[in-house]
Length: 512
Image: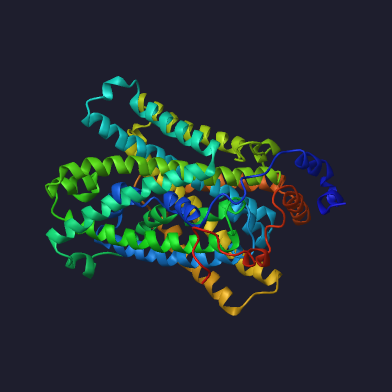
């Protein structure tokens, strides 16, 4: 008799055994897992839309906020990788947190991740719509669409749903191509700009007149840009050699994108310093920069690249977020049907469909309300407004999950007898650094309507606490369900020896 049966979960276990829960095993190599993480971080998104938000928040200290944010999240990544190199699943930080501090706090972590991936995904949908609308306007084709924003929301979500529903490998390769081309064009423009303006900007180096308010809320914006590196852990059941490749993808994605954000923020702030309107008032800073440099044709290419990059972001969030819902369904927090997978595609089709519907409905309802004039007081009148607000909401969700995983790490290592003094120091450093963006969301009080965001997120977390309090299973039941899943999917998933004994596969980096 399994553990879960002996603790009163036999009926649930029988249902689970009769439910198809397999995902596509050995489907993603290192580069494809890395692509998922980079697509969710979406370097093009920051260059195209978030740098103006950062400038409006932190002024010329924007690059410093990205440096601080990268270092801060590296400590989170070090904690995360203590789990990722020992244990792998489709549940990402949800399952990891359960292993450290129990099913209830783990459930809260999963709840925060759903919020985070949902709203960052909505930022992808609204960003796609923003740039698609501009391209249609340039082509004189906006008159062909009824309610163009909502139509473009639907196109983005429906296409992302179809690709995510059909096959994880193809959708990942597509994201890699989209983001790679977009970043290459942006880097070329940035280098041309530096060649014309010079590399030294004394106002950004000396940082005069910036205090905690600027840096604190600026780091929240940096988190908005950088979140997503952890999504590599959501593909543990689909990656090749996951205990080796996933930790590498976590660190590599964060370092690569962090360096890019520091560089591109510095360049845009320097190159557009004397622009009128100012950088914080621009909704397409790269197009403006290309026009100022006499390269208007490049602005069109960048807008097209940004549009496809935002689509990749929406799809990556759909892939990662649905796997959190899928895993929480398998453990009984959500209905078991959400924890089922497609028998032929081997994708979490019910979770994907559920996530996609909500991903479409939230921005659509706000847009319909803006048409009716009901949300004028909230300053939501365009996809661009929704983009900014969705991104800040998503960053709050990630901060909650990052706190819980950093808290869980030393307790997990102590349980398995592998705790070292430096593990406590790294966890403590991560928690201490996370105070900066968390406090920055509420003090000093941000401008309206941002001053209400923390309360809205707090109400959501409270609802999640109530849900997981009543729906979470005991640790014994959790481990019993885990055993059933291992037996019915791909065998034991958490043995480092199994991974290390496997020779490197084609397309993967050699062992360090």
